[in-house]
Length: 448
Image: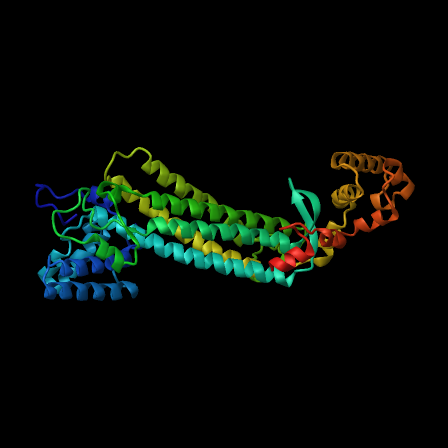
């Protein structure tokens, strides 16, 4: 490290320099650092802590560096340790000694807290866009296959007939909650810590509220010690990322199962599948499997950050440097996974014959038989036990439920009539569902 060492008699070891440097993660924070610095410089000029001409020179230089960063040409040097000192040194090369005034009333402690908050706000916006895009693909698939009936599952066992649209829209709801979580996290992320200094604030006449307003942050810190050490927003962001990753993984797993030969409910287009290096017939759902696997890395990032925070003493500690990589890593993973999942959903074609055949299993209509008796005035528990006895009887005698004679049914319950045989049509089963949020045709049509 070549800066901030006037009080030391020895240069920092090269090994230590490499170890403590954070330029790899900070490469993602350059724009945030420059944006925060521009707002800070404007505030310094407004408060008379630097002259108007100095403010103009600093702001002009920072805008030049920002344009450089947006063009992908801003390089971080390890010997300057972090993004903050790299910006300051490059600014000095551009405008000379006026650059040395930029850090007035600011510490790298409150500066990095702001940078990470700005980055996280941008990441939230990008992930919400990605979630909206995936939801659009889900909705498109649901509309395309709106009338298709398939088995619904509990315990990975066939349960009751449902509409494919209803099943796929369950993921729409999961991602809607993810959007809510990210937007809620954004409220607590948009709190400006700039002005807290190292941890005690400043004796200079600064205006943290002005900086917050320039950055579009509706709030400013209340406690300077908390401001520099607070990474709750990062933990909350990673929690939202983790839940989104889990939902992605669950959706990926479902599509992998549905597309397997054993199920054959859906087929994935060639543009989202790979083949085997040995077996030419294979059509593998690799993107879905990778998306499923990457949820582990995101969950790991959350645990990583929480373990880093759990035993820190009050105030800023350099450990907090290690909260940046998990946020940056998970933002990237989830963002890419959302794009891949949208591609995969767009590539789904539902096999109407196979889904209908599977949904036509008479066992899936036993709940309809129970409700048939309930509608005839039979108490639910008695109706449930009656149908259970009928199912056992049919199984023991090898007689399919639709083929059992009416007299046999009536031997168990006099309420049975010939209309019971209509219940073994899975399409009628889903049509009959009328409760709110159900798989009923009318309910799903309304939802779509």
